[in-house]
Amino acid sequence: MIWPRRKSTLSRNWERFMPQNVTIELPIPFRLNSGLAAARERNLQWMRRQELVLGEKAAQRYVFSAVADLAAYSYPDVEGDDLDLAFDTMGWFFLFDDLFDVPAGHRAEEAVDVCHRLIALLRDPVPQAGRYDAPLVRAFADIWCRAGIGMSEEWRERAAHNWVDYLTGNLTEEIDRRTWVPQDFDTRMRIGHRTLGLVPSLDLAERVGHFEIPQLIWHSSHLESMRQAAVDAVKLINEVMSLENDDARGDPNLVHCLVRERDCSRPEAIEMAVALVQSAVARLFAQAKRIPVFCTRLGLTSDETDKIRRYARSMITWIRGSYDWSRINGRYSPYTASALGSGVTGQLHPANLTSVSP
Image (cartoon, rainbow, N blue to C red):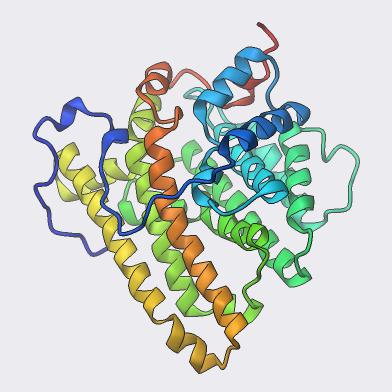
C-alpha cells in the first residue's frame, strides 16, 4: 500500500463530529433519482410481501435506515421496474449483511445457512424442496429472476459468479470472526473487496441500464483496474461513514488498521482514509481517459465503445452516490450508533424486522 502524505485539513474540533460529517472533495457532480419517494414506498411493500419486514415498528426501523435509498443515488437515471429492481437489491444487501451481526460470542449460523442456500441457488436455479424456506433466500430468488430478464446467458453466468464470490467472501469474514480477525490494512481491504458487493452492483448497472459489456472485454486488465479503483473508493467511504457503528459493536474497521499501522491518531487516520479515497478516484479518472485507446486497439464499434463508457460512468456515479447517501442515511446516524452494542443483533437483522408488535 502506498500511503498518502498527511494533510492538515480536518477541523481542530474533529472529535466533536460524527464520521457522517466528514467532507470528501470529489470531482463528481451530485445526482439523485427523481423517483426516490415512490420507489421507496414500493420497496417497502416488496419487503413486506417477502416477509422481510413485518409489523409497523419494523417498517419504521427499515425506513429510517434508508438503506434502499442508495439505489436512487447510485442509479440516478433508472425508472419504473428497473428502479424497483435496484431498490429491492440494495435493501436486500443490507438485510443480508446484518444477518451476520449477532451478539458477541455467538456464531452466525443462520447467516451461514442462508449463504449456502444462495450459493446452491446460483449454481442450480431449479427449485428444490426446502431451498426457499428462508425469506432472504426467497427474496433473492425473486431479485435474481428479475435481474436475468433481457440479459444474455454469458451475463447471467458472470453475474452468478460475482454473487458467489460475494457470498463466499462473507463466509470468509464469518470464519475469521470465529478464529482471529486479520488486523492489517491490506488483508482487511482484500476481504472487503469481496464483501462490499460493488461488483454485483455494477453488473446490476448493466441490467438496469440495458447494456452489456462483451464477455471477453469485461475480463480485461484495464476494466479490472478500474473496478479495483472504484471498489477502493467505495470501501473506504463506507469504512469512514460506518466507523461509529463499528466502534459501538466492537467490529473491525480500516480506520482502526490505519491507527495501528501508521501509529497515528484517529483524526489523522480518518484524514488518511479520505486521501486514499481521493487517490483511488484519481486513478479511476486516469484509467477512464484511456478508454478511447483501449477501444481502438480492440477494434470496437462505436456502440461497443459507448457501452464501455457507460460502464465507466456507472463506477464513477457509484462512488459519488455512496458518499452522498452515506451522509444522510439513518443507518450511520448518531441515533443508530447509540443503540448498537456488542450484545445486540444488527440494526436490520431479522430479529429486529420481524416483530409484529405495534
